[in-house]
Amino acid sequence: MLTGKDINFDSYMLLEADLPKGALRLLEVDNRLVLPIRTNTRVIITAADVLHSWAIPALGVKMDACPGRLNQVSLYINRAGTFYGQCSELCGINHSFMPIVVDAVTVEQYRR
Image 1 (tube, rainbow, N blue to C red):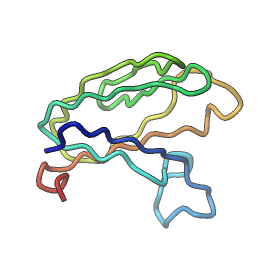
Image 2: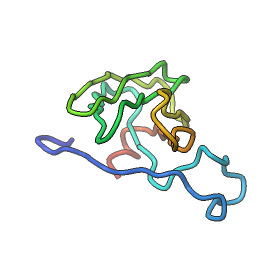
Image 3: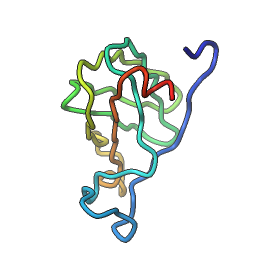
Image 4: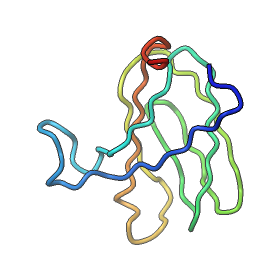
């Protein structure tokens, strides 16, 4: 269990030339967010430039990411799987190139 540590990372859309066979174009990222299932998880969201929105429809999650503000959303994922989302706020020229991928795994897999 992590205590007193923050987990921060960047995740960018994979270029079409870098996609593995069978991957989803415009939805695959280089660094997926891995979360444990059947665990209360708090995600803190912010933005560095303009208003964005972190949305994963299959998880029922949509939270605005505002520059200079921390927003939070609580997640409780019931089943393992891969969940796809995108920025759902018209944020600028690269709006359609901001996918989100969450891999929900068992707690044992998450600890590894």
